[in-house]
Image (cartoon, rainbow, N blue to C red; front, side):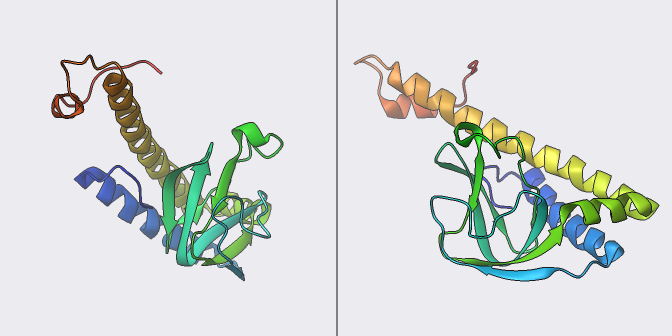
Length: 175
């Protein structure tokens, strides 16, 4: 997972995310369906199904919300679908690729049934979700800082310059 959060903790979490994905799939021994997707820069890739769980096997997927790429999934990352926006385009998360990608596809309900049938898989799944939450927290913090800097830059007076705003570092801001 590539994101704007690039501190040492984020690098470690991204590596753990990939390792846990691999460990989970090894435990479950599910046979995936392989799909190749074409470039889809502004929408979901053809064949996207929110009831499936995907793992990137080649290329990358951009995760977009309100026409902005939030993060990128790369080889070895699991795509946990966002089911909230399935019925509402205003709040939908889109998964597309600028250059195409290769994915492994797993039926979501079958994958989850196997997770809950295997205590070792429950432990790995739980750890994977905790790491995922940690990554999302760091991505949110980075986006929050960027938005606050942009808002502060817009409030600059003629005596302030954008460079002085950037030099002052992160600011607090409620969104």
